[in-house]
Structures are given as structure tokens and as C-alpha cells.
Length: 376
Image (tube, rainbow, N blue to C red; front, side):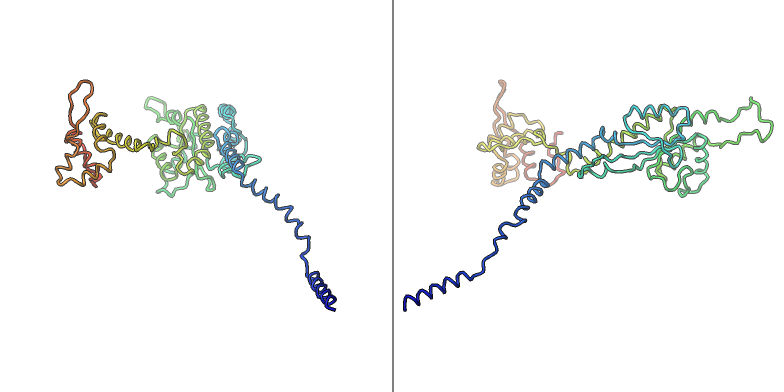
């Protein structure tokens, strides 16, 4: 009976053991396990320093002036092409290498600039690259039209007088260009007494009577009050050179802005900017720096600096010696009697009280405006 009971007891224990719930085996082979390496690989690629450096280099390449010039478009109003000298301007834009488009502009006879976004555009490209429009506008005026506007400005009161050439919705960076204004004013000089006068009032000139002083006054008003630059040129060649210069400046603007936005862009990496580190060979580095510091004083030869550094190999040792002095006079002359090694057959000499006083004041004074060298 005992063995039978033991067998039943053992069997019951094994039965209870088999009745324990087991974890389903499917959790070990799940989809998350198979997808985890791919997700980690993608995240690792996203944080890849080489990829980030490549994207930054591509963004910097797109900001280069030669690259930005290719994506800069000059939009020319068709009314400008009606002038016989407009071919000079179009040939200059063609030789510049930028894109130029003949599109109606507002106001008429004006030029505007726009940027073409690179395709595809890297995500790290700065916003300056994808800027659709520039705020620069150049309006070409005939001399007579410009003088009529000048007369309105002079007759207007104060700086609230609206500009007669621009509608209110034009960009903020406005420029005027007038070709041949000087020649036009000279041709409109008052008729002299020896010439024939007009027979009737109807034949009298009806043009605007504006002279150079009034033009100069209007130029000052435009510049100071309306922030409008006026370009007075004698020919289409000069105007074309100005337009090309403005186009090149706009192409360089994104690169310069990116350089200025970097913190401490003047601290470039390189051995020339790293300075000369102090070495740790038994204090020789500090000793050399201390020797150079002494040499910076006026009228100090290498032999004199050697004498000071030999007696006090570091500034701290000299300060301790100054602190041990009992009087002000003793502190000022602490270096005066140090012997200087004779060179080139000269007789031995001393450091002297003048340098001793200057070094003492340099190490102890708190006045930043104190004149150390009385002999300068």
C-alpha cells in the first residue's frame, strides 16, 4: 500500500506540474523582432555623420556665387526693348550667364530679380536658396518723366509726398535709373538774348523748368526720406554695367548671409590659428612664454630678458620675491642689479632701475591706464 500511495502522490505532483499554463511560443518569433533591425538601420542612416556632412556640403555648394548666379533670373519688361539701346543690356545679361526673361512688370519699364529653386532641393538648403522673389526693383525713366516727378516732389510738402513713379505695392528696395539726364538739361537751357523769341505764347516751351539744384534737392529727399537710389548714367553701356553688378551682388548675398550667420566665423580651423602651445618639458614652455613677455617691453634686448628669466624663471616666483620685500623702493629695484651677460665683446652691465620699475608696475598695478614707459 505504501508504494502505491507514493506512486499516486508522485503522479499527482507530476500532474500538477503539467497543468501549469505555458507561455505561447509565438512571442519569440514576432514581426517586431524582424522589423527592429530595419528601423534601427534607418535611424542610424538618418544620424549618419557622413550623410549630414554631405548634405551640408551640397547646401554650401548651392550657395556659392557661381551656382547662385545660374539660378538667378532677371525679368525685363517688354517696354524696355522698344528703346534702340536695349540690345546692349540684353547682350550684357547674355554674357553674364544668368537667366533673363521678357515678362510684363509693374510698373512698366522696370527690371526685377527672382530665384529659381533647385530641383531637387536638399532639405538642408538654407531658405535663401529657395527664395522665390527678390525685393530689388530698377525702374528706367526718360529724363522728361523724371523731371516731372522731381517737380511734384519739390512742390509737395514734407516727406509725406507720395512718389510719382511707383505704385504703392512695389517692393521696398526701389531704384531709379535715368539715361542722359545731364545732356537733356543742357539742351533745355534758357534761350539767350541773341536768338529769336517764339512768335506766340503757344509756341513757348511747355516742358518742366527744373534745374540742377532742384534735381540735387530731389535726390537728397529720395535718398533720406523714401530710401530710393537714383542712378544717373550717360549711356546704355553704363546702365548695363550697373545691372550686371547688381545681379552679381544678389548672387553673392545668400553665401555671405550663411557665412555671417555662423558663430565666430573668423575662428577658422587650421594650424596657423591654433597658436603655439606651451610644452611640458620641465617648465620650458612657461619659461619661454615668460621670456617673450619680458621682451615685449620697450628697449629690452634678448640678453636682458635672459637675465630676468634666469633669476626668476616664472612670474609667480617674481611675485613671491616682491611680497617678501620690506619697502616700496626695494620692490621697484628688485631687478635693477641683475647682471646681464656680455655679448660681442661688450662689458658686463645690469638690468637697470627703469626696466625693474616697469616690470614691478606691470605685475602689481590695478590701473589699466597707467603709463609704464616714461621714456616713450
